[in-house]
Length: 166
Ligand SMILES: [Zn+2]
Image 1 (cartoon, rainbow, N blue to C red):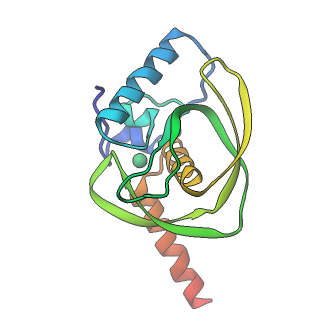
Image 2 (cartoon, rainbow, N blue to C red):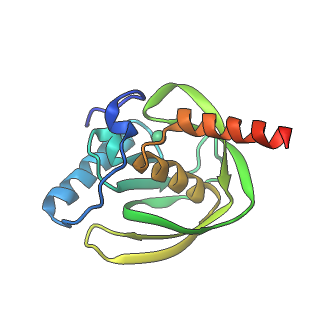
């Protein structure tokens, strides 16, 4: 199991670098990230969380106590993701993070997102995600921009305050 960076560590505040080498080193990192995610009982993990500033994350989903309706899918490795379109509508949901053990946050996420990404072999994908998977994808994508739930929650609170005075 790899050490998981905790909020405040510099690696979690950096913009992650694009992946250019789809080699065995990358596959090995993905495998170790998956093991770490499963041992920590997470549904997603981003490379910066294991101190690698690379544009890569794993998303997984299974029904659990907090999300009983979550779909069961095999963990997927997502590399060089882009969010190319998104719903105007946002939905609120409670989120935790392996890098923030002490708190959970109610976070607004786009209801659906249209995404592009690559897999470990470099193959390109173009998909539309909704519901719990869209939520995990947006959470992990934020990690690649150096945004944890603390920053996200502050931005959200700030914009709702601005909205209130307009
Ligand atoms: Zn997280």
